[in-house]
Amino acid sequence: MTGSNPSSPFAIAQREGATGPLSGIRVLDLSAYIAGPYGCTLLADQGAEVIKVEPPVGDNLRRYPSTLEAESRAFLGVNRSKRGVVLDLKQPEQRAVLMRLVREADVLVHNFRPSVPVRLGIDFESLHKLNPRLVYCSVTGYGEQGPLKEKAGYDQVLQTMTGMCTMQGKTGGAPEILYGSVVDYYAAALVAAGVSSALYERERSGEGQFVGVSLLRSALTMQSARMVWAEGEPAAVGRDMRSGGVTGIHPTADGYLYISANTPRFWQALCERIGLPELAADARYDTVRKRAAEAEILLPQLHAALATRSALAWEALFGEEVPCAAARQVEDMFDHPQVQAEQMVTSLPHPLLGSYRGITRPIVFGRTPGPEPFAAPVFDQDTAAVSALLDVSSDD
Ligand SMILES: CC(C)(COP(=O)(O)OP(=O)(O)OC[C@H]1O[C@@H](n2cnc3c(N)ncnc32)[C@H](O)[C@@H]1OP(=O)(O)O)[C@@H](O)C(=O)NCCC(=O)NCCSC(=O)C(=O)O
Image (tube, rainbow, N blue to C red):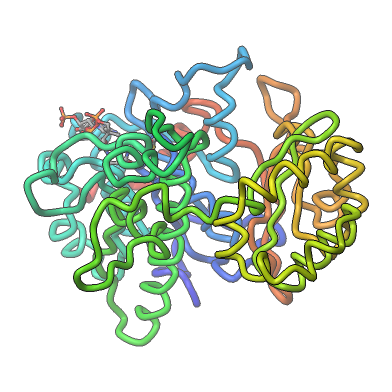
């Protein structure tokens, strides 16, 4: 797969060793917050050159609360491996710079509400005329049509709207947010998948196309395993759909331990290793549904056994045969031997911070592993360099 104009003088893409599967692909990232930007980061991880285009006020994620002084943790985390330019698209000469970039680009991603690109003159139809090979990805809250298309959308808003929060927390309790922007991250994965497919199709047709991702689509498709209703089934089963019982988070001598015992093999291994093999042989508990129904009998026995060791000790004792995990803090994962072995943590030099460690390489490619990641851009760092490479005199 090659870029739209391999002979272009605009050559800031040519990083040494950029051998990822998307090497040669140029992405203009006009998006802010998490879903769009992280989608573009996934493309960068795969070798695409990504230029982040921010308005003069900057990506609002830079202003998110952070315990880091110099830059918000979230911004650093979801914007690695990009150049950073600032363009005021309401100023004709700066808009002309974007149009020049669009002519040279393979992909554009934004997360504006549907009316915004039309106002800025960067809607799909306009840019398709300028560069028919451009893959144009729009990330919205709710989609491009329908009564909510202009409504402001955030991860947590969509979590709450779509029932995800009602599935969390204690039965009878208030809905709870899943911390960690899961809807955004899944939308980001959909951005990367959708853009990649459109680039693949472009190899056959020679033409780019519109790619639409929304937080609503993300939140609902994330719940595909729940959103199955048989004809005539009563609605509002809600939290009753969770497996419950033995499969869940349990207290130990110190912290908490998640255990899954949803198959006969794992149930047997669990019973043996907690010293209650007779439970495994008991026909009253021999299916996951029976175990959930008999939770009031099983849980006191399970908890009495678990109280004799620490969560980490149980994790070690359960080994490979009982799916389980001691509850950790997220920062404990940087040095986890498995994460280290998989080489997912990289230290990135950064002008304001010295360096920071971050998670990289979300996908493994055997033959074309992709370039070394680099730090998220400092605000405005590449505007002059990128503008200097462009001849904007012939553009609108
Ligand atoms: C996130 C939003 C709620 C933010 O709302 P707004 O701040 O009102 O942004 P809008 O997109 O509606 O409009 C952006 C405005 O900035 C202007 N704008 C944007 N870029 C530029 C540049 N480069 N130059 C000049 N002006 C610009 C644009 O013309 C609009 O102004 P006017 O033309 O004057 O109107 C919305 O963008 C949205 O719903 N996006 C889709 C879903 C999404 O990605 N949500 C965040 C996921 S991350 C998340 O949930 C999280 O971080 O938490």
